[in-house]
Image (tube, rainbow, N blue to C red; front, side, top):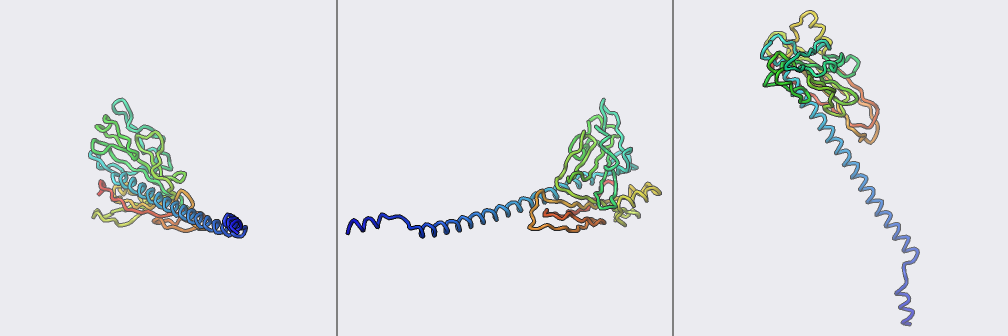
Length: 274
């Protein structure tokens, strides 16, 4: 009898018990895997949203920092503050060097330009460099010798290959300011009665047309409205979606995809034209 009891006590799991244990283990494993995948997706979404917000913030901050200095001049109050053609960009010799490193960067699609088909606008700005203000949009400095002569600093912002890019007076190539920028639009606030209040906002086409008959209107621009459409770097939505976004005077329809998009806007006061 003792031998029989000991034999039963030492016996292993039955096949049925083993199958039940395996099924329970698979359920537990599936739950853990599902929880991990869900957590991973949530983390990716959170990171993408955070990156999108950062790119939008960086783009707006950089645009504001540079554009607000448009028209700065301690020498020439008649300075036209915007680049309207490639020929507006001129390099001058100073201290054995040149004030503009590569004038060829300021092509016709990198001046004040309005898009009538929903594509991106571009903007080009001008100010005189001196010992108080001498950096371009990428932080490159105007040579010291050029600050003592009437040397203009040029900056241009535009969208290229899904990025907000800029070229500045001292740059040898274009620089990416913020990634994931799909579209940018500008409107120019014009003060026609010199009361330091915007009377109307014009797009670049209307402004250029008015300037043809009244060149002084450029000095009447006292603010610039900016709107940018920023996209996440990875698809994060559950399903594809095409959506229309309003950027100032333009309606932009996105591609039918799973990317997250957001519009950022601001109004920049031009301190030196007021």
